[in-house]
Length: 205
Image (cartoon, rainbow, N blue to C red; front, top):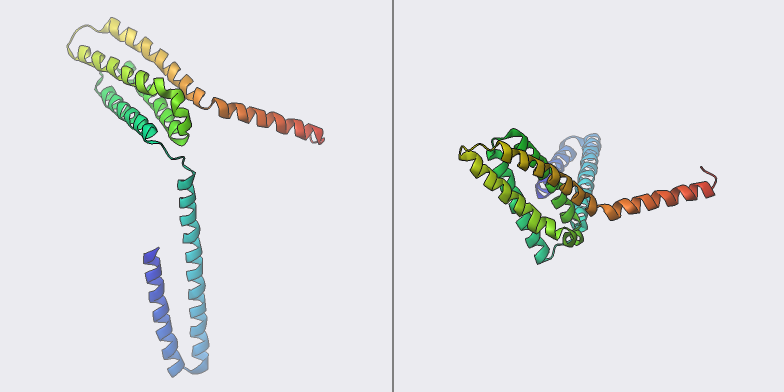
């Protein structure tokens, strides 16, 4: 915004100089033309200022809408984010394509869980077990699997068990995400039902 103000003042100084010269050399006609240019420039400056004011206000408002985290909540989410990042890195090292893809699917859902918790920190307590036990345990399971896989042993049976486990965990992770929005889904259903009832009472349906 400061850069725009600086360039705007530069324009006004230039136009002001032109107006002075025109008044000295060109008489009243040139003065009127130059005055019109100055007016147009001022209007343009006002429009720019208004646009940036609304933009800045919007950014400030969106920032205020975020619920602040307590130190404990911030710590919990930070640790969960660290575990998820390490799990993604670990996935990339696993040779078994089916296991790697399934674990990546779980990570994508976990990402949505963390986003939901960041937007509504009051839900963190409801996901405490998920964040502090299931997520790091999932990482440890895959870490051990990767070590066995790298050893060159026949891991066909182990791979089958791990893939079955990951399928179950994917379902559990989706359920965790659904639970976080359970109250919102209930509210939406209640509001739709109330609105339909009101429309019927008013003879609109």
